[in-house]
Structures are given as C-alpha cells and as structure tokens.
Amino acid sequence: MRPLLSLPKKRGFKVKVINSVSIVCALISQLGLSPYKLGPLATITYPRMGVLSMRAYEVLNENLSRGLHTILLLDIKDGGDFMNVQEAVELLKKMENIGKLGIVSNDLMVIYAARIGWDNQGIKISTVNDVPDMGDTPHTIVIPGLLNPVEQDYLVNILGANEELVRRHTAFISRFINKSP
Image (cartoon, rainbow, N blue to C red; front, side):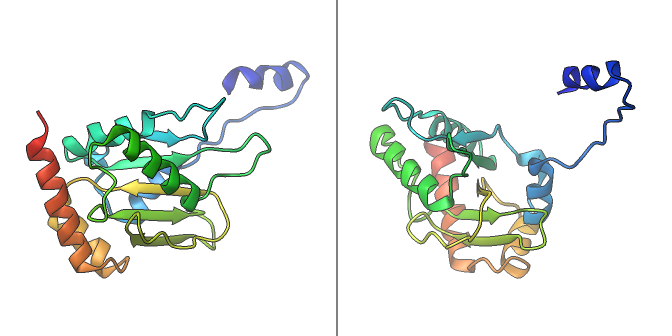
C-alpha cells in the first residue's frame, strides 16, 4: 500500500499513515484466545474455474495437529459481496469429503464471528452441523486448537460456549494431536 502514497505526495498533498488494528488482533482479543497459540491463517475461497482450493483445509489440519488455533478468513465474490459462514462451512464439508482426514466433525468447536470491531459485532460458538445466522457480513471462522483453562473459562463464562462442547472439542483435539505423526 505504501507505494500508492507517493502519487498524492507528488501532487502536493500531505500524507500520513495511520496504523489500525488488524482483524487477527481484534479477533484474538475478542475471543480470549492466546496469541501465542495462533497458527498460520488461511482463506476459504470460492471454487474458481470448477476447482475447489484445499489450502484452508490443509492449514487447518496442520494447525490442529499441533494444537494451534486457526483463523479462517472468508472469500469475497467477484461482485464484491462477502462469503458468509453458511457458505464457508459447506465448502469445509466438501473439503472434508475430499480430504477425509476427520477434521470436520460435530466434535469440532467452531467460533463464528461477524463484523468484529463494529457496534453490531456478533460472536457465536457452535459446531459445523449447527451454523448460526450471523447476519450481515463480513464473517470470520475461528477453530480453536488445544485450549488452556483460562481460554476455556473465557469461552464458557464470557462468550457463552456450551461446557460439554468445550469438553468434546478438547478431547477431539487431543486425539487429533496424538494420531498425528
């Protein structure tokens, strides 16, 4: 972006860069997750020319096998509309049908986030088989890795996560880590 600043400056405008909080920092803060346990992030993309990219699934697999949290950003359509969480989960399920690694499971806890940092932001915690309506986009999906007690407490007592789902998720991630080479 910075190279774009030279043109206005050449035309006599005063230019100043104002730094902002990224979606990554904002999400981790809002969700009470440890930034030290954040793995690489990926984008769930729409199929292009009939090809479904598996990159988000591969990154999720790598992160979960190491117990790391995964932020999945959602694609933008060619017309400028944002992908919503329902579309993203359907694509994740298609990736699971292809990859067959057992990642996309009803024991996997999913944090659905919408409009983080806006006055009408929303955060809901559920599974891939119970995708909530998150309203207006932009949306983001976060799949937690292995949760420490502080993260578990925040998810349950601040964000309203179901304790049984947190327990199932923790057991699922532990099994997933143990079966990885």
